[in-house]
Image (cartoon, rainbow, N blue to C red; front, side, top):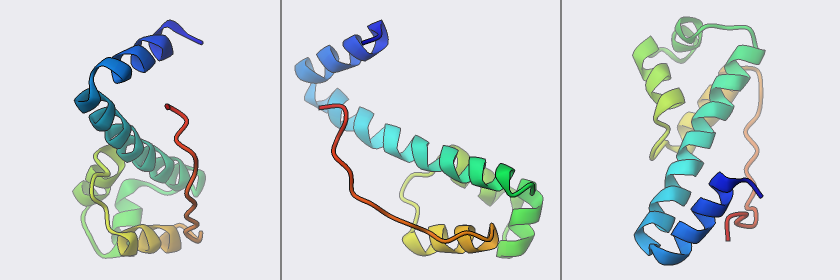
Length: 96
């Protein structure tokens, strides 16, 4: 286990607010990263994706960089615009 993972694990044990905020923030960050990777794999720019979704490039950037409280319907639209389908799963919490 890396030093960072050890630190996070120990800090989460001591600080419940940190633990809650870390887990939520990590999941939101991960969604944005997954969406950006899917867009890049599709070979399209933020501007092209925005055109396909009839929105602005800034909205795409906000989703990719701050995917907090994103609607399921928005995720479905983005996936469709990328020629993909949305698949959701519930997994074990790997940080506990």
